Every structure is written in C-alpha cells, then in structure tokens.
Amino acid sequence: MGSTISDSDLKSLIDAAKNAASNSYSPYSRFAVGAAILCENGEVYSGCNVENAAYGSANCAERSAIFTAISAGCREVRVVVIYTPTESPAAPCGACRQVINEFGPDAEIVSTCKTEKVIRSRLSDLLPHAFGPKNLET
Image (cartoon, rainbow, N blue to C red; front, top):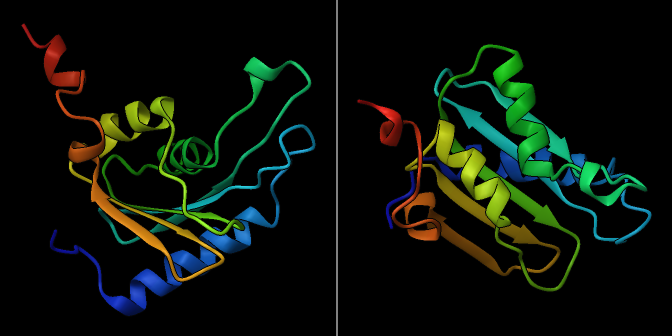
C-alpha cells in the first residue's frame, strides 16, 4: 500500500494521537485511545475516547477527532492515525470505520502503539463493500 503522507507528517500525527490519548476519559475500560486525522486542507485534528457510565453514550477517539474536524469545516479525511498505549496496535471499531467512510472512503489508516508495531491499511480494505453516501443517490 502506498502511503499518502510523508514520514515527518506521519510522526507529527502519531505525536498528536499520543497526546490525545493522554486526555482519554476511560475509567471503565481503562483502554485509552487517541486519534489524529489529516484533512484535505492540511489541517490536523485530534480526539480521545470519552466513556460514560451509560456505556452507549461513550465516544471513540476516531469519531471525536472526525466530529471536531467536521465542526471546523473539514469535509474530507485523508489519514487517520490511532494510538493506544498497548503492546499491539488496535484497528478502528466498526462504528468508527463507518464514520470514517462518510468522509474518507479511501483514507489511509495507521494504527500505532507503545511498541514499534504498526498496522497500515486503507479504509476500503478494512470496510469492503461499505454503505455510504453514494448508496443514497437516486
């Protein structure tokens, strides 16, 4: 898979995702997650997971970052970097994959962790045959 981002830009996104993970509110799962996204205009937005005692009201880091970006005017996500302070990287959950698909159906997804392990893929590989805006066109 060809990368859509330079090594220095990727490092900046990883640093932003790590910083976001440090703000995670995850008292129930104790699974801190940070995400940073790169929009089509070059802007970077980050977010962390925010849990809630009413579990269904929680929000993942990837969606927190995307919703912040959309609120600021971004409409196309190019790259999503996820960081977890674990031994192995974690790919986005199904709900996050669906939200990423809305704004970046071919976005590059980079999952990182506290070790050197990395998962790099395209959203289209993680969510084949996705349902999205084009399915609603008549």
